[in-house]
Image 1 (cartoon, rainbow, N blue to C red):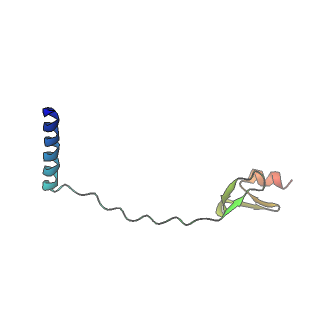
Image 2: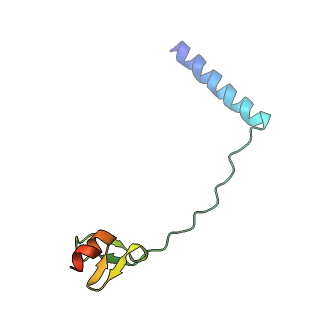
Length: 74
């Protein structure tokens, strides 16, 4: 028990010494810009949901990749 008290005392002294020495404080992080929700589309071939800006438009619908567009347009 005595050893635990000594270790605790040393840790408190080290913490106080570090604060008194003027250790640099962590710079505050700028607030993160919130991510805007995106509209989602469903691939006409496999049914996977993907953002509109990643979708590939075809004659028969929206697709997730060129291979699915080729399969869907046959």
